Amino acid sequence: MSFQVKKRPAGDCLLIKGGKVVNDDQSFYADVYIEDGTIRQIGENLIIPSGVKTLDAYGHLVIPGGVDANTNLQAPQKGLIPCDDFYQGTKAALSGGTTTIIDHVLVEPGTSLLSAFDLWKETAEQRACCDFSFHLDVTRWHEGLYEELETLVKDKGVNSFLFFMAYKDRYQSSDSQVKHRNMFFFMRRLGSSGILDGLKWFVFQEQKKLLSVGITGPEGHVLSHPEEVK
Image (cartoon, rainbow, N blue to C red; front, side, top):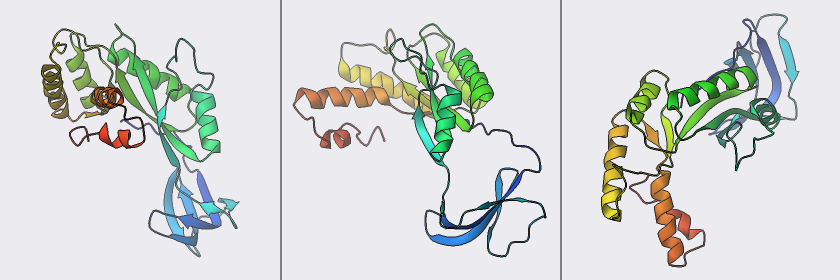
């Protein structure tokens, strides 16, 4: 994931005063001073520049911004374009306290991963109201795929990919054990490049097995995510 942070005006300062700060380990009443988008001070009787914009937070909680790690604000869904695009979707996210999204880049068959990534990034930079990052959904194997993945990791800073490939040719086999072994070799090679993969393909295979034997309850979630996938 290569996080993109929205540019903020230099000298943009804010004092959030009197709220209850909620961290992962404790909650306490304090003032929060923010400068250029970064929290600089937390406490009482802070020494800050004059003329700083002050937000009265008495009676309110001051919590970290949320991260939505699974959005689809540009990819077509069953032939339909989402009405909540990067602008509308992130505007709504900010209204609910979500300050970062991780959007899925749908790489259509025959499309370069690099081209798809650049299109999503350019659109998000122009339209998104909050910070953003991407997962790349890889749907087909093609020659040069591994080289593109390496470029995305080393030059673009991306490290999150979800593979929904058909696994034809070098990974397709009528023998399920051979198919799994070939895919593990592929994933191991990706892992050596620092790529974090969702391994959705393996999860789908486990889900099919469980459904075929009648396991449809919540226990199926744990069983379909074996230790090897984690």
